[in-house]
Image 1 (cartoon, rainbow, N blue to C red):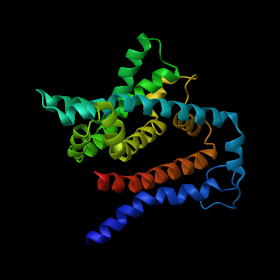
Image 2 (image 1 turned 45 degrees about the vertical axis):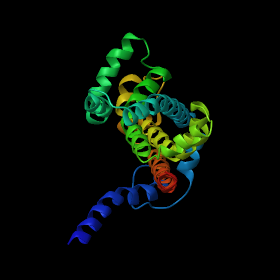
Image 3 (image 1 turned 180 degrees about the vertical axis):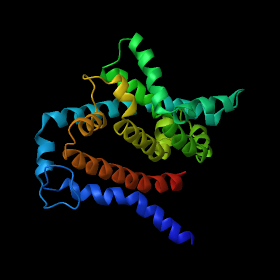
Image 4 (image 1 turned 90 degrees about the horizontal axis):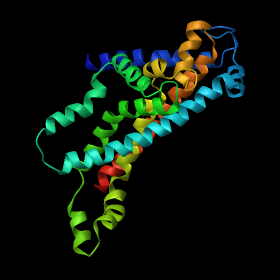
Length: 255
């Protein structure tokens, strides 16, 4: 019974992918399944159209910037949260998880008001700030879990051998924690790259991302190139999961 239910759930989750991927190779002039024929025409259109490549480049730039901002915020916060005892620790954890709990529409309205006053709406920097904060909970959970499994005796042994705090961090702590940090950065990147709701509110024309372009395209013209973009995004997510699954056991074993 349990196995049958799991298979049904898996089928339900995979069915959209099974439909979208063949449609990305379709020769039809609109969405049609099953496709009447197969070609790479829509892939060629995506990779030669500035209308699609510019939002893709914006998404990459914003995702990289948001990842850097997230890691700058999360790494010190995770060290402080895991290694020190202080009052209000549970409240700090709740605040760190708040972007994960609050609906993105509510967050988008708040960012629109705040970033609008700072004149950052419609800019890459404004979207980077918003996406960076939204990615904090996932990266914080990953890095905190990695830190909790870290054996601090390694640091004590290095310091007792004469290494200073900075040398200990870069030569002992960082190499052990690097896989977990890479996984956290990867999830932050994917979270930003795939986010659409907030960027619809604050992105404007100057910082239009790929998900925003997809939303506008399917709302106004139902361009079949969306199937190509969807296939590429699913492939990127699958690749990211495989990379994280490969890195995570190495980090756990090293710790």
